[in-house]
Length: 245
Image (cartoon, rainbow, N blue to C red):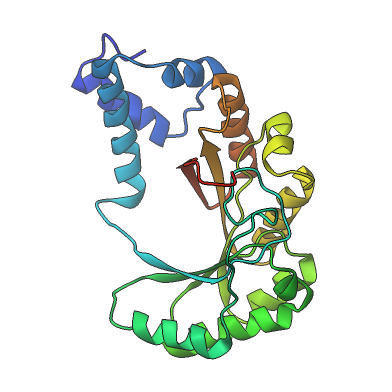
């Protein structure tokens, strides 16, 4: 695809992407199949040009506060899935406050409150709201929540208490692969939670997981799905095997 392009050609291609050029399935397929190191570096060059247009040369730091490792789900890729017999914890309010105090002066831009789909917090979202209150009191920073799929009422409550971002990754838009990864979980329900959160003012993040059986066609399906969703942020992660996954 980029074989015969020089720097000027690559700059022009990047600008067309920035100006809104839509990549076709064939374009995506060709990019995903690049293996030649010279052509791959040209692809990376174009990607950096597009990235720099939107983000410049800046790095934004955030800190996870993983406040519960309990989870009701059986996600095949996750160490914390409910089938794993592991030591788990659920931080108390004072523990969370102490973590926040230790984060003062660390020059982070955001706090990510992360947990599994802990039944305690899912059934008592007001307790989750107290966690957000503590972070806001101690750090006065934007808060991302990564709680799994919450219902509309819980998402509304947490937004009212100051949650700014929702991270809720689909992992894949290949429905067959999804059913093998997020066992017994609703494909459309996950999409609805992001769409509702976006509607009520969250900045929403979606994500794609690679290394879990995605072939090129599956990846194209996911890229198109993420494009349709039009979330504010997206990320790509790579599966790292652990015991119990």
